[in-house]
Structures are given as structure tokens and as C-alpha cells.
Picture 1: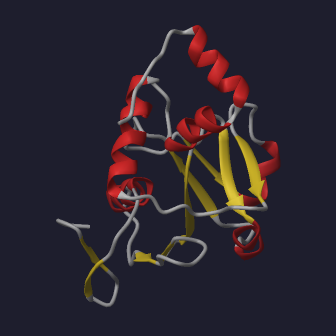
Picture 2: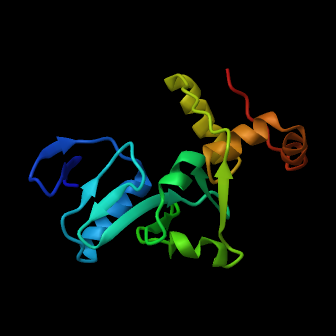
Length: 165
């Protein structure tokens, strides 16, 4: 990707919206000599190269989340690249066939009920303020803190008060 433009093996130039992990993965694949990189926005795995197939995942705490349809689309030789927010290189890589033998630091989690929530720009700004104030690693954690009673008690114990008017 150069300035928001992705180049495919067919020399097509298209502007594509990608998340941070996908952008990091594309750069990592290029820097590690993979050729003919094709990004598939709405398909599993995310990247096809002349050397193999790569699925990109973001690390949520200690979990890597797959939807059921993604699990069915994965093949044993597919490589999963796991990125966190701080690093530009994968924090873990593993073949799909090796997912059960991962060390305890990373767990493969199957999300059976993944929902997408759209929020207004102002709500996004407020969630960002909470994420920073509470020093939480993700928006998922912010939403859990807001909706789970025991998390609210933990935050009260820390004297965290944020007023959103």
C-alpha cells in the first residue's frame, strides 16, 4: 500500500479501506519478500501470495477471534499473522493446522455471535475518551466496562470518573 493505494499482482490500482492489522500485514509480507500479493477484503484468508495464504488477526488481550465461516474457509497450510497495537511485526505466526498447539499466551476463540455496531461520530469520540481515561486496550473493553456491572465496580474502586455531556 502506498498512500492508501493497494497494488495487486494484476497491476490494478485501487483504493481499499483496511484495518491497522491488515495494513501492517501487507507491509510485513512485502518486506519479507512475498510476491504477487493479493488482498481480499471480504474473504478468508485475507492475503494470497505466490508462496501461500495468510489470514490476519488482531490480538484482543490473549485471544485471536475467528468467526465460524472463517474457520470453515481456513486450510491446514494457511498461515495466521497476529498483530497487536504496538508492533509493526506479527507478535505470533502459526499454521492453521498448529492452532491447538499454541502456547498459553494466545488462545484461538470461536465467535459464534459476532455483531457489528455502528456509532455516530460523537459516540466514537466519547468512547475514545473513555478508552484513554481508563487505559483500556480496545473499544471492546470499554463497552464491556460500561455494560458489565462488576467492571463498573472495579472502575469505581479506582476513582475513575468521566462525565460525557
